[in-house]
Image (spheres, rainbow, N blue to C red):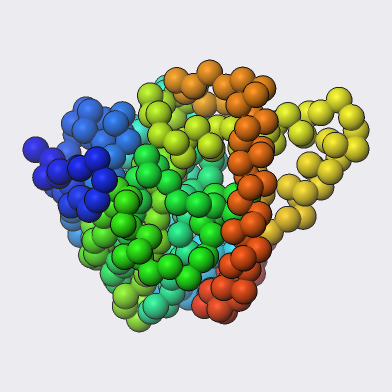
Length: 316
Ligand SMILES: [Fe+2]
């Protein structure tokens, strides 16, 4: 049975499950209702816990044609390095389900130093994420998409406004917990999160996937769907200059400002979104420019804390 309690607002203890959980049980309690959970001991027996260091990973991934580096993590396919770890059965079933969009590069590897910290954000692409703590330990903070945080206009990154987390959490459904070595957290789509690395060496393996349909009705999911619809409208606009502007913006803007939907169909949601709804979203996003400008000076100290962007010297 999941050990959890969730109030209309306020703190809740994250649910915890054993690694023997079945796909059916995981689906019913977490995947369909989109609730986070820690699944304990998933990586306890993995060779990765002994083998993985950043230099080992860089050497191995450099030999893999499918592996690449993003700014903060490494991408790889599901079958890369899998002599070092095993994919739990319920994870494979999520990735392979007919209700999941097919994709390449299901896996990310994060390597972080002590005190590396992400800023508050939710992941783009309406992704579901399984995140295993292969080495080290991280502190996680999650806020429900039902009680959203303010984001920079049209992005999924929250405005850095100098508030403490206690002030931020005052009226939010939230949880915080430590993810210990060998354990895995499931982050459902559009849950806000901030993560702090606690040990000298912290390595995480992720699997990502996007469901073709969701029954979720959170304010953040609606915003996310509208964000993609506005982007789709602009990139296919009948005026060439509008199309070119939108395409160039997405090509050259920093990663956190781009809007990327990698699938050929939109996700099915319970929302009926009208043109008026999209115009209202557009106006609402522009309305956040005031708060963005007001707190612009608080971004710089955060950017100084970011790790050096990842690179791979490919051998091939
Ligand atoms: Fe994230």
